Length: 382
Image (cartoon, rainbow, N blue to C red; front, side, top):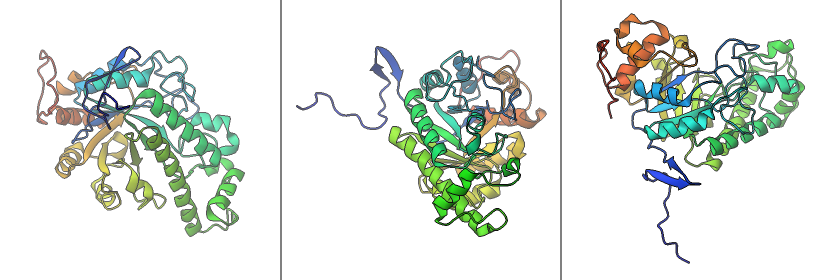
């Protein structure tokens, strides 16, 4: 029997779709100019390492967060599926939620952001997860706040399940993949390899593990590239099989790391972030990416980049902009007026980055200063 209604393929520009009696906003189009930010829930006090104690910021209100991102002119919000402490930012998932989570944070943020024509991308950290390290000590080099997880079959099965579950349940438009790197924390095991990683080496290299004192740099790189590629294939397959339109956003702190440089991951990723932010690595990345991959550069206090240099260079080259920093006012950052009522050059660190990005995202000149009584903040430029 012929269907009475035409088949709608992809993300068609319908405004609302009726589902289970509730109006659900359609996904916005991917913007031509990426203007992204992240209030970063990965770093904070209370945990057993540099990552926050589970449940820190569990009172975060998705409406307040979406309003903040809108106020500085973002069209892309980077939020969290699972932060590095190993707990999820949505309810009733395959991974336990942040203890005391007041809202179904990520799904609610997605709904609200879509109404404001903003995309929401979540986050997974491939190489570090405190909860995994605590619950599977046989498969992790402890749980420091650095890459500590070998990409064993068991871990990739966990990652596959977590990604499919998050993509399906949250409605997010994609997610960032961080720390797609080899373990740097073997020193927690007296620089000895775990049995699980010795087995993984033999599995991937087709030869027995040669021993910690005999493994050559070439063998290390060969093993590292195979392990990283297999992890990448798991991530991308889980995302695209669950939602073919899911954006996978890979971030690299060093695009020239021999385990990732000129890799399949760089060729296949939808978006690529040069987290170091420097022009040299961004230019190097342009030679390693696929024809569809979009480049994004980063402003954050750790990479010590000058926003007055990076922002105009990126915009001239058609490269997206992104920044991140941890919350400083409860689970948020100061309001947009804080950054606009004083000259951008009067700020330091991440506050200066936000001040410059907000003016850029809102289509304002960098010397713009908003009078204290003026309201509301100008709307973003289209």
